[in-house]
Length: 257
Image (spheres, helix red, strand yellow):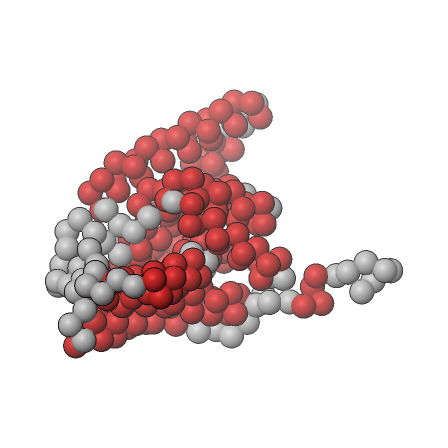
C-alpha cells in the first residue's frame, strides 16, 4: 500500500508457480480426456458428464499459460537455437506417450502432441523478430516499416497454416497464432493474454474462454523466475501421459480418439 493505492507487487507470483498452475491444470484436463471420457464411451452417466465438464474446463487454463512462457522463454533465453532444439527433442520424445494415451497406439500420424505447436510458435516469433530487425535496418519511414512488418506477419501465419496441414498438432495453427499474439503484445501482457484467449475461444471452442481466469495470477506476475526447475514440464508432460495410458489400458478403458 503506497499513498492509499494498492501495489500489486506486494503479492508477487513467480514464474515457477505459474508453471505449476499450468502443469496441474493440464494434468486435470488429461485425466478428464483420457480416463473419464474413455469410461464415458461405454458407461455414460450424468455424474461422469458433469465431472468431465469440470475437469476439461479447469484444463483450459493450461495451454495459454504454456504459450505465454514460450514467449517469455524466447525473450530471456541465452541461446534461441538451443531453445528450439530443446523444444524439438521434447516434442519428439512426447509423441509416443501422447499417442498411447489418446489414440491407444504407438504412433498416430495425423494427431500429434502440443510440443510441436509450441515449437512452431517459437520458430514463428523467432522469424518475426528477425524480420522486424531487418526491416528496421532499412531505415524506412514508420508507415512503410509497419506495412512491411504487417506483410511479414501475414506470410509467417500463412506458412504456419500450411505447415500445420502436415504437422497436425494439438491446437494447430490456432495455437501458434495465439503465441504470435502474445509476442506482438509482449509489452502489454494482460491485454495480449486476453486477446490470445479470446482468439482461442472463437477458433477452438467456447470452452477455451475459461482460460481468462489465468489473468488473476498473471496480474501478480512481474517477471520473477522463482525456483529454477527448467526441465519440470519437459519431463512431466510425457511421464504423466505414459502413466495415464498405462492406467487406461490396465483398466480396459478404450482410447478416446
